[in-house]
Figure (cartoon, rainbow, N blue to C red):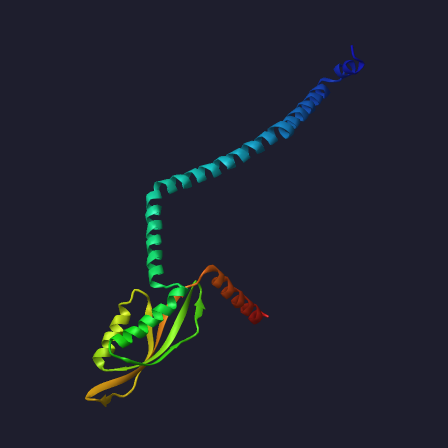
Length: 208
């Protein structure tokens, strides 16, 4: 018999029991630390992944359930964009639009004394294009002109309206009207990037 084993068997009963308890504790601890804990951690990770996949699945089901609504919203947005494109001209259309405003005045019997396009002002994805006008005509002619401007397919706002005192000429009561006609146009991507750069530099200078 192995001398060590023989020596162990000759120990008192309580010592043998204590040694067995320690050995069993070491075995249990090793099992828990080297086998159980890694597997438990792996199980926890799998549960977290499973929960994340469940959330993704629920989101996908929600999107699939409302897919028709999203499509309708997208189509509505596309329609609104097309309407906006109709109302806001492109750069190349601005001269013809301004000429149209002047022609409306003349077609309604008004004399155009001043027609001065101003400087464009970028405002995000669009720019405002102002024109200062001075026109002369009677009440009816002026009313017809402003109604015609309001019926244009493009947006043209009339501001800063100033009316001089009526004057009589050839038995006609004439009014001289100064006003600012402002239309708007879309900026292309290159123009937007050019506008953003100076504004960012201006903000940096103010902060400095």
